[in-house]
Every structure is written in C-alpha cells, then in structure tokens.
Length: 195
Image 1 (cartoon, helix red, strand yellow):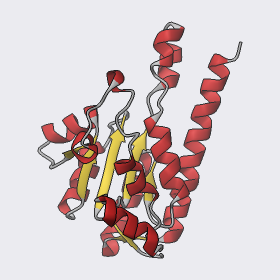
Image 2 (cartoon, rainbow, N blue to C red):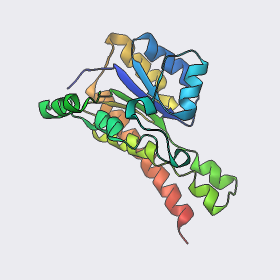
Image 3 (tube, one colour):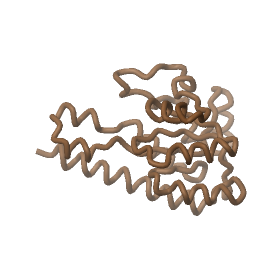
C-alpha cells in the first residue's frame, strides 16, 4: 500500500511537547484518537475528543500502570497487514478496529538515571508498552505510520495536509527512526543494569 489514509491513531507520550497541537490537527481531519493515562488527560483538558485505551480493550489499567496497552485489541490493530484479506477478516471477526498511526515516545529512563533514583525506582521508569507499540508499528510500516518523537509532528502534518494520506517512503523513514529510538533506549538500560 503506497498511500495510507489516517483514520485512527493511538497516542501515548511522555514528552508532551506539541502534543495538543498535533492531536488537534489529527482530530480536525476526523482522525479517531485513542490514548492512555497522562496523554489522555492532556487531550481531554485541551477539549480534544479522545477514547481511553481501557474503552478499547474493555480491561482496566493494572499493576500500577504496568499493563495498559499490552492487549490484542491494541496490538492486532497495530500489526494487521491491511494488504492481507485474512488479517482484515480476523479483525472483523474479533471486532478489532485497525490503527493507522502510532504516536509514542518513551518513559524518560535517562532522566531517572540522572536523578540517581534507587535501582527499584529506576526500574519503574523502564517502558514496556511503549517500545512494544513502536516496534510493532515500525515492523508493519506497510500498513501504519509510526511517530516516535515530537520532532516529526511537522513532517507528518505536512504529509497529511497534501491529501490526507502518508506515503510508503515516509512510513519506512519513520519506521527506521522508531527502531533507532528503541535500540538507543535498550542500550541505555543495558548499560545501567550491567554490573
């Protein structure tokens, strides 16, 4: 699929720079927004329509927020190949709506290290759901756009402003940036935990 229309997005960000403007841009183009915790509250406070992840999964956030997005209703919606009829049939059969855009940036583990938190406290700053969504969307860039950092918001808006779609070339470019982000994140954690 070359030109991908953006109709449904999930946003879950630690760095909220430019978030409300970006989300409003999407909402003004009739993109359905799904979100988690603090991101959802930020969007609601700005008056931007948003659906809670728990309303999509029909399951509450649990374990102090450790489990929010790790659910088939999220990951099947991210990983479905829109060029495969059997994938779309499975989504339809199970009542799962596909996503077209994943906007995620990760917990600030570097900041946790700089603040000299205890090991136990620092471990709580290791993001699990975020990297899973980034990697899933990056793997499936043929069918979804991944936005791994606020620095990409203007480029996404520019792409969408043309005709409401994003090109395959652009999606592949951002997929590579998402894998770069998760690999650097994992390297930082590896360095921190290594005895």
